[in-house]
Length: 122
Image 1 (cartoon, one colour):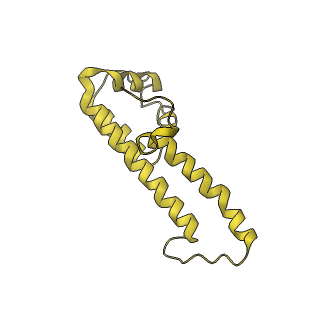
Image 2 (tube, helix red, strand yellow):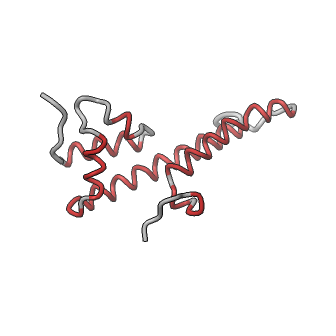
């Protein structure tokens, strides 16, 4: 049958829900029942689809918040635990994981990190 290319509210809701669940747009658009990434990106710049653009932005915010939550859990040693880092080596092992989460957060929520984001709308 082919990939859907026509905008529908149901499809837009599905895409935004999956993004809010921390799935990348690239991954979502690999599925046969979703449109190509270029199609979704064209919907985002379409002036007639401002509601979708707002919902997509909200989904991205939710995604970024969940990355921050995960970063805090990593730093704390897990959900609800006080950090138990007995030595310098244990702390060093956590640094790459925390750094990765910080990068993901910066990339997913550029408005929270405007100096680090290359393209800003005027």
